Amino acid sequence: MNVFTRPSAAKAVQGTAAQHTGTAAGGQQVTPELKQWLEDHLQAGTPPAQVIEGMVGVGWQTALAWGALAQAQAEFAAAQQAAQKAHSGNLPEPDIADGRSVLDIEGHRVKIATAMKHPRVVVFEGLLTLDECQALVDLSSPRLARSETVDNSNGGNEVNAARTSDGMFFGRGETPLIERIERRIALLLRWPVENGEGLQILRYRPGAEYLPHYDYFDPVHPGSKPILQRGGQRVGTLVMYLSAPLRGGATTFPHVGLEVGPVPGNAVFFSYDKPHPSTGTLHGGAPVLEGEKWVATKWMREGEFR
Image (cartoon, rainbow, N blue to C red; front, side, top):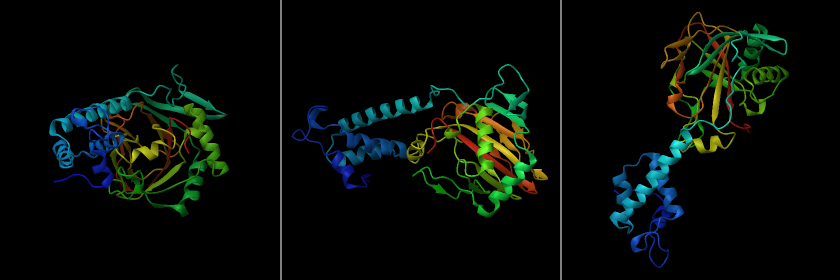
């Protein structure tokens, strides 16, 4: 089976001594085009034997093809390791290192209910007032649609059976209410407003859930590249509860056995210093068993979100 699917891929591996200069015996050279093609197949998980078969099919010597693939694999692994290292800058973080239990954010008192170091999880009480919760529900209700997830193949959005809520996004600072809440979040977590995505509102009806997942964008997936260009990696998540169901609907962290119950006005924050499962931030929304759950989610990026 030949794995080449486009003319440029075949052209990339047809180096000859007359066309290229000296990187491999026999004149076969690892060109930028070939490097990109090999990276594409490494990201897609193409079996090495199929990659070699494709290269040999357009004239590469088997031994040299294996050498080129080994080089690409080493570079790919190094890139992955670099992506998994902690960010050089700070992470969003409330000012609670001294053990304080209440934060005053421009006259709005927010209590610290629970704090965990790894994963970094903080539960806030009273981040939103009940009037603010209801106002967000009222503003978002006419604009709700079936929630989507990121399509890892191209960076677009798609309906996914793992997520069965309805939702919508507000533009950053879209209304005075949104602007006020975003400023409060920025001061609470000491993270710039412009480094936050727009506020997302979600409604979970009976039976709706969000299976355990990570919020960062895995750099292995081709679809992550265009998303990361809009502000860098996600580094923090804040889930604010606008209403509580009668039963079910907790935010769960399966790796550490933590469940956070949805209490209107409260919020759960967690951060992640690298796009890697070692952060322990696997989380999900347990099924709503009775009633409805409404939440507002704010994701924070490394840089300015555009």
